[in-house]
Amino acid sequence: MTNTLTLTRPDDWHVHLRDGDALAAVVPHTAAQFARAIVMPNLKPPVTTTAQALAYGERILAALPIGSDFQPLMTLYLTDQTPADEISRAHEAGVVAVKLYPAGATTNSSAGVTDLRHTRAALEAMQRAGMPLLVHGEVTDPDIDLFDREAVFIDKHLVPLRKDFPELKIVFEHITTREAAQYVAQAGAHTAATITSHHLLFNRNALFLGGMRPHYYCLPVLKRELHRQALLNAVGSGSDRFFLGTDSAPHATHLKEHASGCAGCYTALSAMELYAQAFDSINALDKLEGFASFHGPDFYGLPRNTGKVTLKREAWTLPEELPLGQAGIKPLCGGETLAWQLAVD
Ligand code: DOR
Ligand code: ZN
Image 1 (cartoon, rainbow, N blue to C red):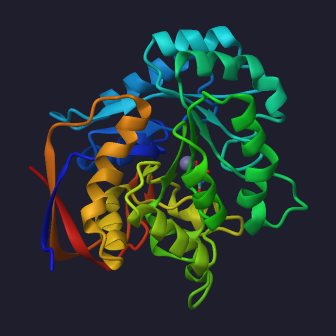
Image 2: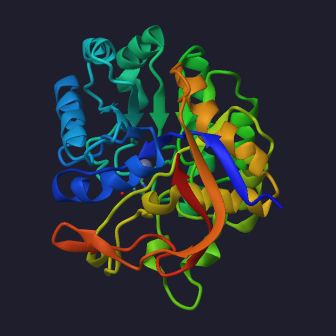
């Protein structure tokens, strides 16, 4: 049995850090686990310009613990109006990727894209620049069952998009279904996907086990066991099309435990421990380094990290709640004992 696992320092290719007091509360957790992270732009108001992305990056750096070398990788929020020259400006300024939220799909997505046809010029500029498009892949049509929205998105939007922009790098974010895993596995070298730890560890029963459990509610929502198994197979295959993206999404406790609770699981505090648990469950710990540390930078065309981290099989209990400015935040699995613990060398 493997009890110690040393890996190249990992990165998080999809995280929400928010702003202000919440940013200050959560960024140390991500910075303790990861060397870099792709930071989502769904702030209020969204990060739609290069100037906003650079200013947000500075606020993240200012909120880091002293001595941290964590590097935020900044993104732009795509809208129907994003001009091609904003993409070029962003690329030249070091903004790494652009996020597509279908309007209304999730938290702070109301300014998102209403019709992909409006984004042609921006997508062409991204394709030219080699800038990845990060896709929240769910249709928003209220007539489509919530659990089917990802699968329908593939046929309705992703397949045509892939065809129209054959060279565009596309990351299908936080995939949750067998259909998505199958699609990505055969879609060619310019398509990849991130997978969260919670979608690897839990199926939709977790939402209702012994009562309604809002801390397990995220978007895309947890799916049936067969889909969880397909995601485990995808990461266990060692395919470089799949890489780590926590989608850690902090929301204050009172907004999760609410009649209309916010979507998002807070996993930043124990991200690598949760992934280790998932990979361990299928005897695939030898595939964790590729998933967490190599496939992401290789796809983005960024250098791999050089430092190391060590995971030890050492039980510890996650705190139930932490401060989030004036409020609190409950990490996913708070109060529970985890089998693995991360130590940075
Ligand atoms: O669960 C989610 N939370 N899914 C998303 O797509 C957005 C995120 C958030 O920003 O809270
Ligand atoms: Zn997200």
